Image (cartoon, rainbow over all chains, first blue to last red; front, side, top):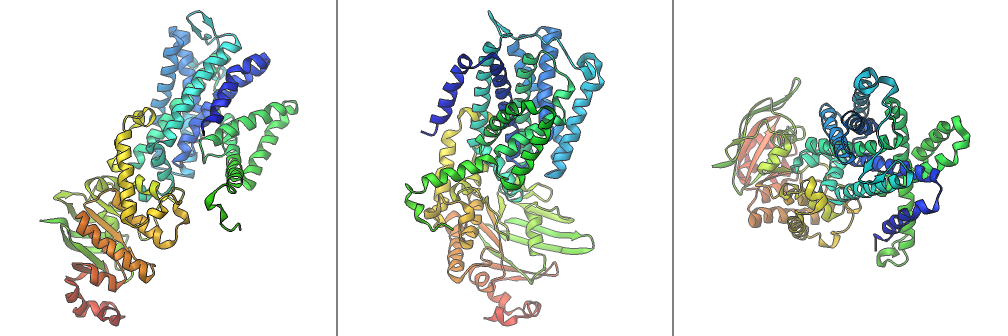
Length: 318
Length: 255
């Protein structure tokens, strides 16, 4: 019963390219890549670690696939795997010193270390192309299908999105996911009942980086060119806005956030340079008026609808 | 042989000696009370043994192994688990979920099995065990209630349930009946006794409620100004002059 909505949405996604123009197919590709990124980000927020380096790990995946595909001619299946793995390994290296920090310290520390990684791409013209980045990243070719066209690539990204989200969802509802939330709720208690807090935080960070890396691989092959600016703190701020708008309390929050903010972003396209102002305004409105994000609003609505049919629903309403 | 052997344990915070040269032996399946006036260093003592803080000097041996330099999770893994003076639980989880997190040490789940299954059988067993523990504490009716909605007494009981779920060999309770009403206190006393009698665990508790300590503990250690003041059977402690002096409210002990 509870899977009806996800399956209905999935079915809708299968037929979507038939119904919309090519421009919107491209938008949907970006939307799905952003979904992977935002959902991967939520994983680390569940243990209380708000990282400011998440899009840098997207960049690690993008640069890895670009290097492997361009210079070594590796096939897509190999580069997507290595893109994710490279991101996970660098994630482990980055998180190691960060495990001594939490909260605000982690926030700032992750930004600093993320910038460190990003500046390597800026400073080294070989092989990363310096500030202008890398161009001529090969398009994906698998057997006879040419993924240069938007629609085939749309389906490729759809497969990855479903797989990544399914894995992240399974982690979220597993004991491991619960343990991460437990660490956030009460770290001292968690330690004293035998939870290795540092190991779990490192694991969450690395897995999260893995999926951000995969999002980066998918992005790099679509854009054909990447540069360090794609993965700077500006992009990170958008990611933060998505998850603040959607909320991180449930798995669906960031997904709602990406959907709503991308619709607003498309609608606000004519506003051009005023858009950052609009997004900043939205961020402030949500932080002050709806800190739980849109998901908290939906949960309240569901409660209201479920109350009448509920046996325990006759509690006094205050 | 004593299950817990503490020798010359000292802990100082800057110039403040919170614990000074403490010696303590706890026998297997004993209920040991640790008492002392406010600020005597009882909670510091608990913190040092459970690995929350490192001792300044001295040794702590559990079951013959030195645990004085281990982290809290490693100490818990060896079988020493403590509760906190405050209400320490996972407020957004249900009662059953709270207890089941306590089964962490009995889970073999890794990332792979989290995603693809594989340890599901064991997890079902863990959930079953968690239900038994909830039942043991008489909280079955609240099993699916969110922890933050529970009344205070039940939240304290849930703290004990989470610790019990780890199946420790030595359970350390930091003021288990603090703030409880007489009925809740009686119930908690009964449960602590059952933990020893039926589960065979060793229990060490810090408590201010003298009545509870006196009729629950096999042996009592009194700490004052970080030093051991006296140790003995409840009736010996009750009649000990030093102890009565340390507690200005002497009648409380005599009662």
